[in-house]
Amino acid sequence: MDNDTRLIIALLIGVLMGAVDSTIVLLALPTITVDLNTQLSYSIWIIMIYLLVIAVGTTQFGRLGDILTRKVVFNTGLGLFTVGSALCGASSGIAELIAFRAVQACGASMIQSNSGAIVADNFPPNKRGRVFGYTAVGYNAGAMLGIVLGGIITTFIGWRYIFYINVPIGAFAIYFGTRYIRRGHKAGNKLDIPGTITLALALILISYAAVDIASYGVRSLNISLILGGIAVLIIFIFTERMVAKPLLPMKIFRIRILTFSIMASFFQSLGFLAVVFIIIMYLQGIRGLSPFYSSLLLLPGYVVGSIMGPEFGKITDRIGSRIPATSGLAMMGVSVLVYSTLTITSSLYVVLFASFLTGLGSSMFFPANNSAVMANSPRELYGLSSGFLRTMANIGMLGSFVVAISIASVSVPRNVAFEVFAGLGKLLGNVSTAFMGGIHAALYVSLGILTVAAILSLVRGKENRGAAATNPPAGAAEK
Image (cartoon, rainbow, N blue to C red; front, side):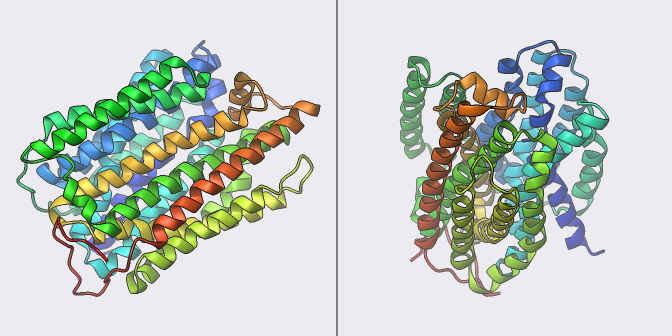
């Protein structure tokens, strides 16, 4: 086994752990709620705090990786994630568990924000697509694998072990990461403290408002939070124009391929993960399947995506990102159309077929799009670009939960939608028919969002993936 293979293993384990834990708690929520003597409205924050911290942290820790080197921040993230996992498993109350999930999420954001930059540091542009294919396995399969593992471990071992299992895996990843990730170079910059504070505050306000909308619907509190977040975001933009070493150099948005690829990732995450949530609600609330069996129906597509990701990554290395990424988004759109044909009595083979299409589409999109971001990022901004990509994708993931709950719950009470989502209840009769209408509406919204992602992907521009290709300077514009 050569050093490059060991490096890929370290990256794959790291991103896989972070992605798995974004959803592994989902099927354990009812058990955790009862065992810790709390309410579902509180325990749902075990998932939400994780997504919120990652959405806020990835850009900040990506920038820190530029300063301290990616190896230091990535391996620190592995250690923090592992310790946070052990503390989560040992939690005696809901408040402790939510707090330790925040610690775990800090580690995950360090891992996610620097993994792409490590690939760019260690592999030439004409070989990165294949490597991003492997790391895409972690991102793509991780969220779905988390749902399956959550069901298995909670059912047969106990909910605390969905966290304890990360301890030996994390130790293994730390060993590989410490030994085989090359240190890389420091960017020689300083942290932009005003920019970091204002961007973090803006993301916290907007993300918290999104969670509040999913929980309680539109009300004056979350509208005020969104407006406040937008106001702070405007302050952030003005701040970045005045500081000498900005956290997010505005000239980076002059690089067309980089900007459009990051925005395509945001809309893909926003639309695609909403579909996964919606179909789980369909299988549990309308078809009456257990959370465990519901996840098994979606698993084959993710297996296909994991197998095919590296192969489509190789294609990306040869022809560039635009065709594979756009084709993948189109394939996901077709899968949503297939899902939209579901009725109360449809064959479950429809779900299997649509899941296969989503897996195939994601194996095209993720390696190509991730590779496009790093291939067109200035070398001195690798960590920033990698972190910003994950930030936008994670904000999209958080938004997808809001889309799924908010639109589907138009047809049934919001508390009923939450119970269906967590696998606590089955709908009957006319209520089931009404909820089916909400599911179709949510799927059409997701299809529209994926269409926006596909358009952004298509018009991103051409790129050079030859062996001699080099990353552009920060002010270069792509045609």
